[in-house]
Length: 118
Image 1 (cartoon, helix red, strand yellow):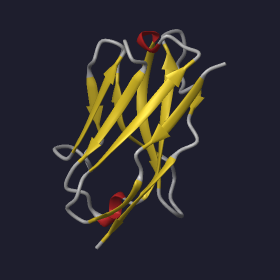
Image 2 (image 1 turned 45 degrees about the vertical axis):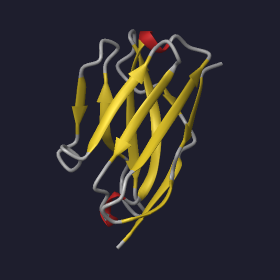
Image 3 (image 1 turned 60 degrees about the horizontal axis):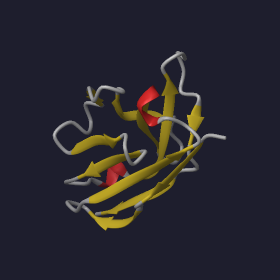
Image 4 (image 1 turned 180 degrees about the horizontal axis):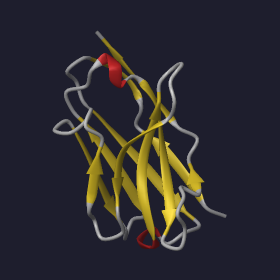
């Protein structure tokens, strides 16, 4: 079955950087659009960054210029590089996949927590 496993979360001071990874198994990564969502306490889950199978990216306005999403289809990995982190970036970050035949994010990881201290 499809599994998405996130790693790389942790505690960082404001202005610092973190790199999140998502390891995908049970799927052909190149057949999927991939995304990173986050959910802060008391808030709805929001899409932070997405990347198509061909590498086109889309970032939320709140993270443009600070976050970068990338993928390595050969390694079945997706990455989120987060720079200039702010306390408002504190959240649980989830990796998600949308197969080419689907209109929805069908697969989700368990999440990795990111805490940015001021």
